[in-house]
Amino acid sequence: MKKAVKKNGKQPDKQFLEVNKFLKIVSDENRLRILVLLEKGSLNVTDIHSKLKLPQNLTSHHISKLKSVDLLVEKREGTFRHYSVNAKKIKEYNQMFLKLMNV
Image 1 (cartoon, rainbow, N blue to C red):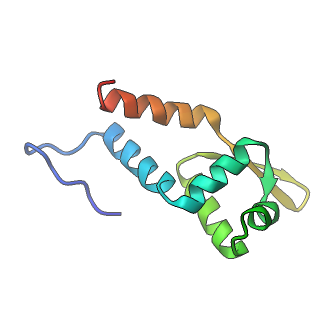
Image 2: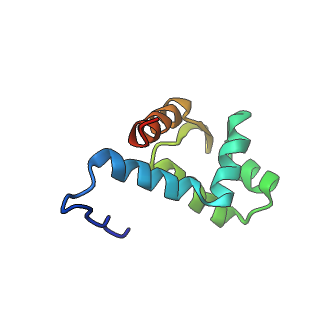
């Protein structure tokens, strides 16, 4: 990932960098589609790729990216991993963004 550009000679703070990473990850159409789908309930990779008509390897890649910012919760059931939305983390990012924007 690129380093954030200094403004007024200052490095961006940690919250700014977290919000920036979150926005970059959810700005991908397929990742947003996965989040919207999982908001309805937990699914495994096979179900997600089937419902969204994405290749399974691409689905796994997007899930990995979403997990990297804790937007998904993973629950193992036998040999399957079921994913659901981490609503608490989405609310945290939303609050950080609103604070950053002084809203």
